[in-house]
Length: 180
Image (cartoon, rainbow, N blue to C red; front, side):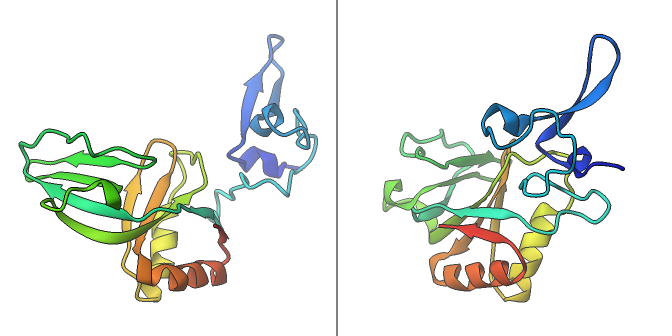
């Protein structure tokens, strides 16, 4: 029988010095309730991902602050005020775009304010397909505008403050777990 752990994002395959292959659960390093070497499926684990059907649900954490999406000239240096728990800086041939805490942005900066941020619990493996599409598809069906940001470990969705309740409701109905 093929273990669910084989498809889990928290498990890696390990080869011993003698050439034996086994599964090692990363959660065993931090949570004593998880076995180090899964002898059977670990069904309560959030890391399970069915590669054949895509991951059906995600855990999203609502960050407490308001964020701004700022636009600076393409030649601008990264400003000192661009700091905080979540900062995303993108430079293109046309602009310098910064996402940061709304309260830190000077009044004279071109910005769109009033964004709330939902962090997709990660880390997410690069091989996962459709994370953003799954979540934004649900929100698009509810007529909710989304600004998405990806990092090495995970993804973030920004929605307007006035859409946060509808966002939580839509994602919960779709089977996703929301943590406040």
